[in-house]
Image (cartoon, rainbow, N blue to C red; front, side, top):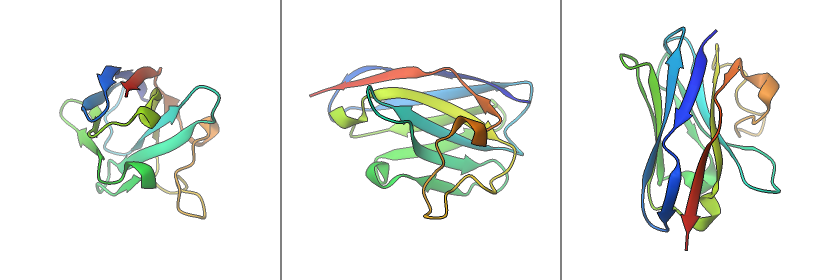
Length: 132
């Protein structure tokens, strides 16, 4: 299994950018789907974005489309989440996770499953705080 280490969170003003990183050890991401999730205080975890290491297919939650970009650097075994035009409502703990197949990562309605049991590995969270 792949082990994950998330980093890159911080405190920024609204409208600014951050880039989160998810470093893999033990394996590359070539055969995995790698996703980013977030959980705000008092709210359930939600799926933000996911990318297929096999063919580069991506998914974005509606409220981050056009602002966030997910990518993979296979050589560095790192996944990134570039977050632009950040809003206070983006404040949350962000997690990365990996699953050994793209199949089954999306719900029937097309949104990203946020559940721990649907992914093989999870990184620790990194806090993102956006001030207004």
